[in-house]
Structures are given as structure tokens and as C-alpha cells.
Length: 228
Image (cartoon, rainbow, N blue to C red; front, side, top):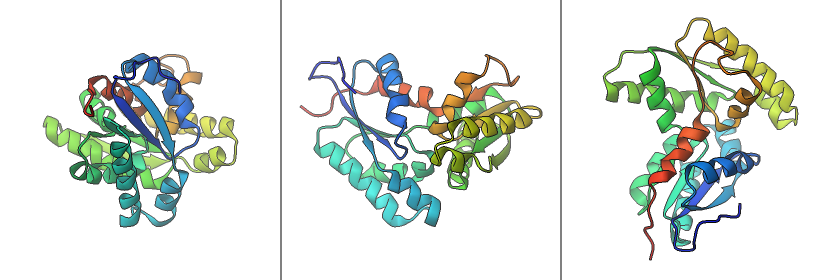
């Protein structure tokens, strides 16, 4: 991404685990945080290892290393766009001298403010637990009583990784319609799911549907320059 921000503007590392996500975030960065100079890092093996083996300490250590390298390169913040690595991002915070932002924290807080019957939909089991934990923590912080449903969308992840984006989107839409019938708000747990909404008319599901890219990127509006 080519930034129009001046060289004295805050520099931000945007860390992804899905190769297609820089193209999703570029327009959001220009719209919501035009004052920063972002650059993208993509390491799909972080997600692949988490899917295969669960949240390993070595994976968290690798993410922390990326944060350390970004800080050494002059970054003023790191935005981690993978919800499956949200806990690892939090573990990196006390070891970094710059903010380490989870993409999904604003979304979880908004979900709790929006309704008490919350459904979380993901394409990966590895994303459900960290997202559900985040929503429960947001509810506790807000003093809210919620009912939380978590479910995966079988076949969607395999469709996307196999290059069949249309099937990926169709499966998510079908599952989302079912969940919307008896919930107040629907959370799409992964940033890679956000594009599904663009093909649907506004209000098509009858309940608010929250995704992480927009609200997560908006956090960068508050980033200021740390390095001289």
C-alpha cells in the first residue's frame, strides 16, 4: 500500500495470516486512519499451525517476534488481524513498547452493547474459543448478562483455501440466516468473512451483523508517533 501520509506520520504494522487480507484493509486504512503510514506483513503459517495444533507457545513467541521486529523497524503500533491469534497478541503487549491491537476487541464490545442474545459464527474452530472469550470479557466489563451461541460453518474454510470464494460466501450466508432467526446480533468472527456482507442488501438478515475489519481498523485513528 502506498500511503499519502507524510514521513513524520505514525507508522503501523498490519499483521495478517491470510494472503488476501491486505487488499481488504487498504481502503479501510485510507478511510479510517489516513494519518498513519501502514505496511503489511503476511505469515499464513501462523494460522496454519494454530489450526493444526492449537494455540502453541511457539506460535505466540513467533507473533511476539514480529511485534519486536516491527518496533525495531520504527512502527508505532501493530494491528493483528487474525482472531485466532488474539490471545497471542495480548501476550505480546507487556513485552512491547508500542500498542499491540486485536482486530476483534471493538467488535466484541459492540456486540454486547447491541443485544443480549449473541451468535458467533466462524469458519474455524480455532477462532471460536478466543472470540467467545473476548465477548464474555466484554460482557463482564459492561456488567451485561448475555446468552452466547458459537458455531462453525462446515466446508467454508476449505472452500476459501481451495479457491472457491463463491461457495465460501454462500455457506456463510446460509448459516447466518439460520442464526439470525433467534438471536439479537450476529458476529462474524474472522476478518476474512467480512466480504460476505457486501453481497447482501442492507438489513437482509434482519439483525445487526458485526465484522471486525472496520471497527478494528478504526482503532488506528488514535495512534500517535512514538519513535523520533
